[in-house]
Length: 345
Image (cartoon, rainbow, N blue to C red):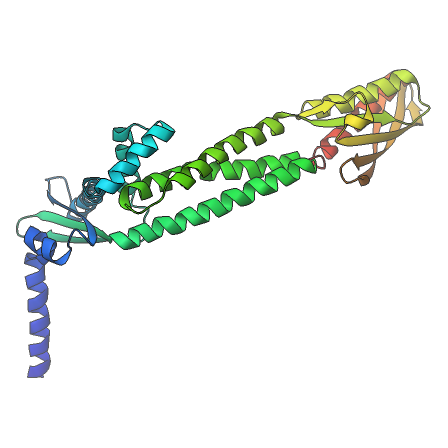
């Protein structure tokens, strides 16, 4: 029993010593054990205020330690990296101070997975201490891997977007282009960071690629701004005024959803063929009832085939046959363009 108590006493004594002392709080110890040629280190201390809890003090000092880490990255820029920054500035129009501040902001956000943070609260002095550190080589490797991933994703999204534009799948193409655009600022940040932390980073090719991406994005956005072109033809013997009503209602709905109307089939991305039929239902006193039954084929000119076929029907009522027909056509046209918009991409 006495041996067990002895062991417990030793453990408690060690905890007590740690609770009142911390080796890495000493600058000489940090310099010896975390040399600047291997590590980036940020250290901070904070005296707990009256309204703070110990946890509040620790949170604040951790945030400051991360900020100090980012400042160390700036301070430790080698002459080779400084030359790189000058080259980046001349090619991309960056202001050096703005670039440094931006890199500091990136690092302060602590998004680097291999940053480690130690914290310690001294109960005697009511002071919180924190040390944030990262191995320089690990930091460089992290950003190099991120660079490769971002380039792969951007290339993939742009390639898919271009392919879909050629296939008249412009809605999906826009989504792919937007995804690529989302990654470009992240790529730019990654390049800036590597310029600063890695003297051996060959930035020239990446800056050219970044510039090409921005040009490609503008080109794709320009193509996507061109509306999907549709041509509508009606094959029916119903009166011309009803054909015009049907055509106007369907095309009006489509043009209100980023489509444009072509004057001939050769210019169209999609050809819509409509076969309407009016079916006189019944009458109820002075009220007339008419059904508009309409068959629709959607033809994709790129795929050179009909990609969608459906039948629609709606009932119209009015004080006259003409009013009943118009209401039936309007209702059916609304069903048609709402459905086709999910198929035209």
